[in-house]
Length: 139
Image (cartoon, rainbow, N blue to C red):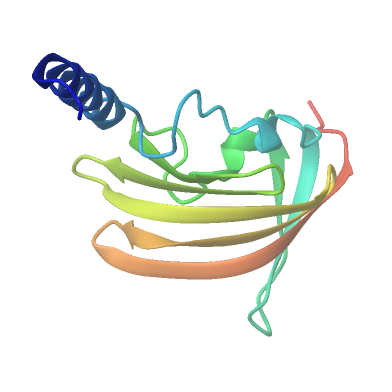
């Protein structure tokens, strides 16, 4: 039979563990989006999967630039939903400017699959694209 003091100690320990877990980010301890750090900076071309859509070229300084393509440069609050070695998903909210969710799957350090959707300027957006590094940025 377990003594009352041992049960109390176990219950207090379990309560502290649960309280600590509640304070962690949604993605777990130490989420760093390390996969995005492995993507090579430079000139990237995004080819949308929608037929007839023109490819877009972007100068990417770091992989995290790909998270907020429709809300670039805005100070948005991010929540990491998935943080795996080959895939990340991030939800973000930009007060007064909309929100989005972006998923990026890494095939190589120069090839990704990207899916993003949300609200920009009061209008919904959704796009899926393949991204490929094609060179260095100019200027």
